[in-house]
Image: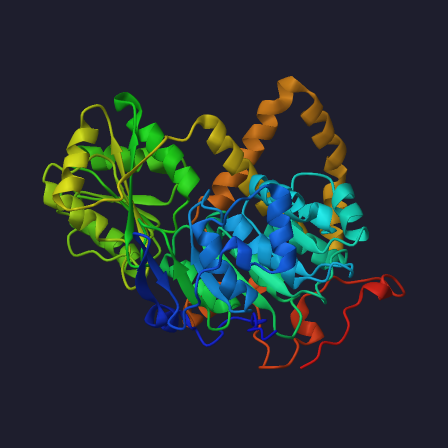
Length: 531
């Protein structure tokens, strides 16, 4: 089967522009679809190859969902694909069924790798893989941080053919030589936009160094395709093609319109929770009043965010400092009134937050239009209290915004869960970067850490240390794909991936492999890769 390849290095000729140019809309069963120029017909359950068809029968699936019927022909044909699809649309089956067809069930070892942003999603994907392929002989390993290595190592020793996991823990196993990708055939990025919001980009780039130097089929699934996700596709997939069959996102240039009904007296706390869950690269937060701008800016700063304000009350010197950061693209959150933000353009603006609906309906369009520019998608989020939601819906009707969605404000438990996963991922990444002497030095604190964890009354000490670490390391904008020039200037040297010349493997100096003691783990050395 003819396969395109995942490039083992950044660039892949930066195909994102061609992806957009080659895509075109169609209408199918009342639903508009965007798919590649050389489109393939959608597939029915009866047209599936024998193994995936048997898997559907065992799972009790009577028919394919739209994303499965549309995406699977491309993946089965080995075409690299970017798929825009929301959680719950059936995308997991869209890549698991082709994986069943593409791997060799008689051969042990990782042949398919699926990267996901959270442990919950990793578990969900592995459960569906077991449902579809368990009785057909598919061996699956689920891999994520915050838990012991034992069951994961057992799954690798058992010959897992499909590995599903978060980038950080996958990288741990690659560095230790407990996971080898020499037999990899297909590589999937699931919820790529969320992986970037979790701060996994550096780990994803280091995982890329361990990919074999031969053609590998790759696909990427994402609910939205902001510009930084499009660049991510260009870094990992060669000539990726774009497919979307979401009625409310028919092409990547559209903006997602979302609103949250919040308690009127806790609007600022709701904003913080939403920001924690969304974790945008950069955003403008619009307020109607100058006093509200100052209040929101102070709240965000107190919570540790890189935020600043802009209003007509600001002194000229302070205004120029804020504007200088805006022009450089180094300010993550700008809180402003509509008048103060007029004419300002923030690079890679993924989100617009409206702390309250605008008093003038036309301002909604001006605010929302700040994101989703230059062929990328974005998100416009509005906080409403009480009767404000009816005013917002009236604005949506006036401007024919048919995809306005209501979402539930995240709970404290939701925020605690996502923050915990970010902290674990960041701590594991920092641990990987430490040398043997630093690790020896830190071992003296292991007994203290254990005793603090076991004593309930000492838990505030641990919470204080973790909070300080989180504020120091994770409240900055998450690392995301940059332009080549920016990447050279801004990426830490330890995370930079050196591109290999076309058709040639990386040298040993480029691979950042772990140091090994003489005579140890020789069996884990990678084989030479064909050009």
